[in-house]
Amino acid sequence: MFSSVGIVSAQRAQFDIPLQFKSGAVLPRYEIVYETYGTLNADKSNAILICHALSGHHHVAGTYSEQPKNVGWWDNMVGPGKPIDTDKFFVVGLNNLGGCHGSTGPISINPETGKPFGSSFPVITVEDWVESQARLADFLGIQQFAAVVGGSLGGMQALQWSLAFPDRVRHVLAIASAPRLTAQNIAFNDVARNAILTDPDFHGGDFYAHGVVPTRGLRLARMLGHITYLSDDAMADKFGRELRAEKFNYGFDIEFEIESYLRYQGDKFAAYFDANTYLLMTKALDYFDPAHACEGDLNKAFAAAKANFLVISFTTDWRFSPERSREIVRPLLHNRRNVSYAEITSAHGHDSFLMPDLHYLEVMQSYLNNIHRENTK
Image (cartoon, rainbow, N blue to C red; front, side, top):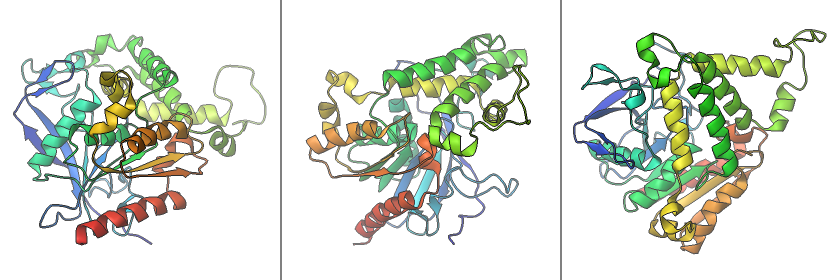
């Protein structure tokens, strides 16, 4: 039985050097909230960066003393004896800019106005996040990461690290990810955003001043997203066509267990997540496409990469299907990069990258053990 990293605490780094976004907008100063686990070795060669997905944040592992039930979102992956072993690695998790868990974002106070940024917070891209993450690495004295790891949108950030800072990352682990979204994925994101944008309580993104939250829009966005994170088999096994009562009520209230589950997930999400952050995160997903500047050619796009790669996909993930992961593998092989690819049989759909599947954990642990052996040679 592996143990947890135990009680952890969030830290805050402040940056006064302006950050210019890909859009041309400039953030004069900002803060990034982060957590670390394990010990940085003497030559600072054992650092691993964890990049979070759409609704993720800096709290990757462990618990808080004041919130013992608030367990990190990847606690099954990060900790002593776990695949990302904190007895071997110094692990950094952060909340990306534009987030709503402490880093500078739409809910933060704009020092120039004394009010929340709201709709004035710049549209952000994966490239912008990676630039800010590199500055955090500088702040921590880390010149090169042993690995950058991420699932879904986090995987895109890991890929971007290999392109923007090829000499600053030795290994990239991209899990349940893609080199760019399909049209279908962009469509799902647009529907989710429109649920928020058309909510009467959204007020063009400046709902804070009105003392309201676009709860209905957030609920619908999360419900739609959650459907795409699960596989058909997982839904069938967990809910089937089970009714909450013994008979049909012939109305539009909740009758099926799956309806109850989705509304619960929607309500829970709307209670803590920021609507503007949701818009920013999904748009960053849409924009990510390293091949865009290379006439659509992924082979050219990945020519800059120097890292070794582990790419993992899951059989029932239809949001980021195995074929999307193979779209990462092919241009890396074309450029003669060292690539390991694993397609894991799982019933959990896109959420598989968060699950404690034994085969998945063994693949991760084996690869990371090899990284550790490199460090100790």
